[in-house]
Length: 365
Image (cartoon, rainbow, N blue to C red; front, side, top):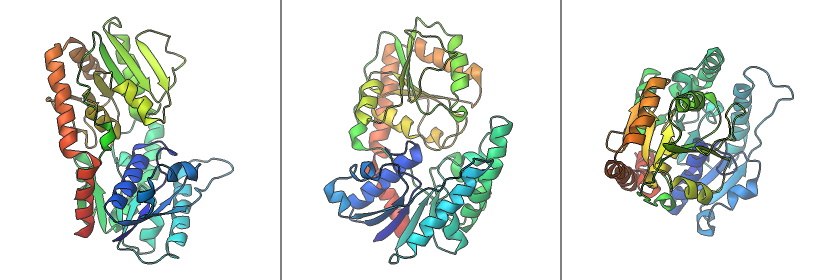
């Protein structure tokens, strides 16, 4: 089988859940003997290629395509550039031999479906159809729905991460939906299900409103900071947050081992996002034996339950405060049980050797 995997970036050159998903798809397709033509954009192509082993590269051909830029940014320039990028990808794609399947990430398949190419598309979190946060967010959603609507309606297959995302695809006219969960690499299976004297929380993500950081900082103001330590990975300390022994900011980390060294020593991952798909950070934290406090959005309900954590409503500061206090007050023996439950669920269902077989079966069908 030969697959065209069309991506808008590859981890770790580009940070993001979809970019990490693209990396692992290419890796595990190749490990399963599938020939992959990987179309992608990157700042550092050499960094991308060296993430794959020699044996994996025997089954992968790399096609780097520049993502377009505009001299002066304007409202909607990202959507405009996404269309231009998709067109560039298509122009290179049609010069290659035919494929058994074309797998498109995000908006990369926009020009392809307009040209009648049969693709399987994965729009991941479908944030443009989830809850908005302010007028600017609503306007951005309206723009993003232009490519999303076209891709959903014209794709031969729409891949869903499950949960609420499948319901969104159904309501927007998807022809055929295949639920294929993301996975994590086995190197994340650490199972550090110990507990600390103080509750150690951790947040992993970018500093953007969609991630719910503003609400999280407000919630932390009302909690006794003598009872917890909170680690932030992916962001620097905001200017309005005072230095504190309870709030530790580690900045952007691209080295997986450095991230693991911090997360594996924590007790609970907090994911207060307003909109999400199936967050890789939740899976990685579960693999390291952490309990989870997360908002019920996207496919998070498939990962988090009372057995391994707590689900709360989006944009609800009362529930967020209650959730944080719940874990601070949780007896150590019950916390360890939740942490062990997280590890068990990931190791059974969400490691890539398992997840890739679900995806391969979907492609073959």
